[in-house]
Length: 427
Image 1: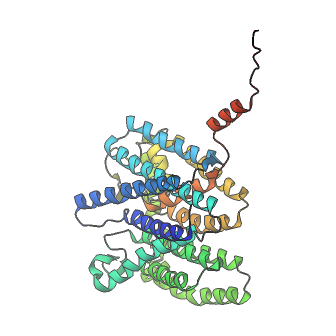
Image 2: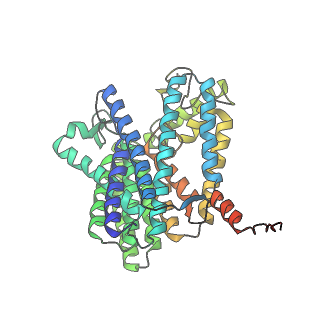
């Protein structure tokens, strides 16, 4: 049914689908209209593509049915989306809220079918060399390689000038450098997983170098912290003492350079202490903005009555740079309580999971996206690939497949097994 050749082809297609899906979150053109069209085509196109892959598997006899373990995890996330839908009735801009909600629901559907395809393949071919770490390391690695080549051939498009033009950060107009840094850490974590799994070391090492280079060039402080935590986690999992010692020595040697060039850029300690102006902004949001709509917020992905939140004490902003503050501004204290419960339930489900391979995957993906959530768009912010990664984790926790008969088949089977009444002929 699913021979080796089919698995190889399917693996390549899944890498391509993930690559294009993630690329759909980038600003691919300076023309706003063109960018919107490309994003719609890429995102919805890849969702349709993964559904077609699922249907192809079914046509090849992969009739295993879906089951749910930890169903509460996606159900609570669905409740968050439903509250977002209800907020359209009080949103300060229903059109914008509906657009953001639609894009997040679309990625939710993609994540569900992607995990379902993955589970189906491994259900019928547990010996198949299909690993989600392989798919993500290749897809993110190629994207970051494009950026590294871009700064060589088109530096004006792939570099973003900050600090008054004194610093050039990888990302350009295509992607916020901090978001790109988060993607670099995700890619690096997946490469580490590949190396731990004992896969062929050539490509994982190459893409690991690509992701680390991209991370350094983004100059993202939060992503550097995420990478350090991921690296320490995997080093701790390694049984090779030489690897552990070499990693610790390298980190100690690199620390002064990272401190001067990434953490305290240009020696600006004050900028770091107030998190580049975020702390005053958050203070103004919570003390000036939230009291206006404390219970249910301003509507899905809205933080004020106008397009920008403005205060005399800080800069004007359209998003909060913190996913949990974003939620409390969007959906009020009700939304924040729901989101905090959902995250807590997700973490509990992870702790109870006994699959060591999945636990490593969860940590490698969860650490960078949750750290990013405290300073950027995050897992409950405006649409971004961090949300997609979080949704993948939810369905990996929840979705299973089984070959047990369906309810209809069980009813028919029982009916066939019932003894038939005997009728005596009348002579």
